[in-house]
Length: 275
Image (tube, rainbow, N blue to C red; front, side, top):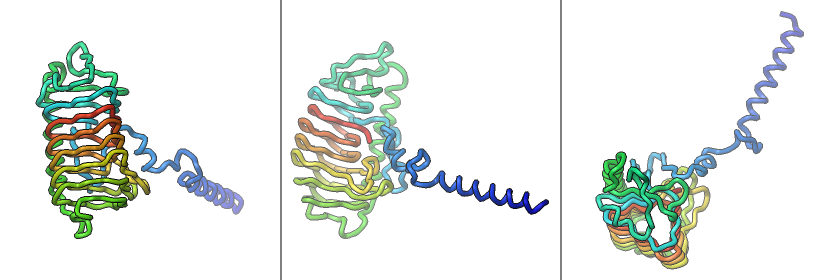
């Protein structure tokens, strides 16, 4: 092989290597979109992080409860609403319209492709699907309960009253009620997982908010609460609530997350959006 041909081959290889290296750069092209950015654009995404609490088929719902789901119009829910073993009559305030096969219902308060399902829907596999989802919700609650606190510093932090706190990744545990009277910041990366275990009620004051920083994602935040959860009027919350009892969102409250309760859920002109 001649010297000129070898030289040409060497130059072509160099140009190819440079081109391939450029595809992985942060130069603003499509290839530079990060995993975090692409994941954040997926409505209803469920955490796949190893430390996360597995939701199973409960992740198919923005709201899931056992004895009742009531709205005071007008709320805005992005995602499905499920109720079991209670019947559709306990989906109150939604102004339901059943599909012809009575597999599901729709409501002007459930946006996009979201639907409402109840245990007595006779069409399709709705009843069986809801039984499985409720079982998965209870399993998720138990799995969260079993996670040990990360350290002494994450056990009974501030005696159960979080005031102007910034919380980093880990498992937190309180042996009593948890009160949030001010804004609280959850700070971490897109792969950090936060588990907050509360033995007692969880109360958030009116017009206060949970703030995410550093790339932390709502789908990686889990609130396991043995008592009732009350989010005050005009407040904003982030994360997945796994409540042993009831969840109440007062007038104008909002959440980027899921409401999963083992009794009932009441919302009042509120916004619920799956992360």
